[in-house]
Amino acid sequence: KSESRVLLASHQICLLFCCVGGTYSLLPFVSSRLFGKEHFGIVYCLVQISHSLAGIVSGLFGQYMIPYLGYGRLFLIAGFPPIFSFILTSLIHLTPLVTMRTRTESLVTA
Image (cartoon, rainbow, N blue to C red; front, side, top):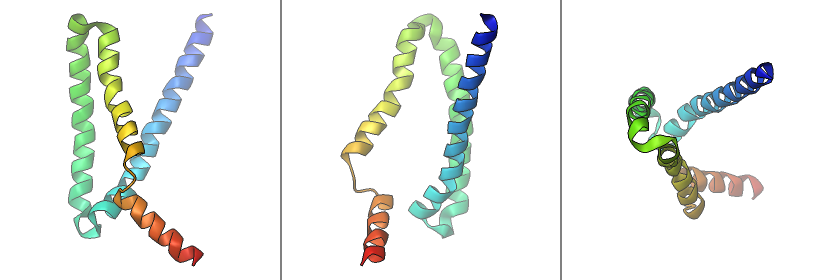
């Protein structure tokens, strides 16, 4: 029974790192499209620094807030921003990447 738990946990960790790798592969493209190639170095540097700082801050926040909030409330606090961003992205369709994509699609189909 413990072997199956270890196997399940290893699969979950692999899936988690696949998502992290997907984020790192998309960030250079998105940042160069949104901010231009002339500002790419500075913007991508700030994105990488923000990833590092977010990992440190969230780790410390989670470690010190578990005794006060408990796992349930901390899970809700950590889960709310992705849900909010998904809803916001679903409602607003006028991002620069979408308008660029629709222009190129209309040029290709014309």
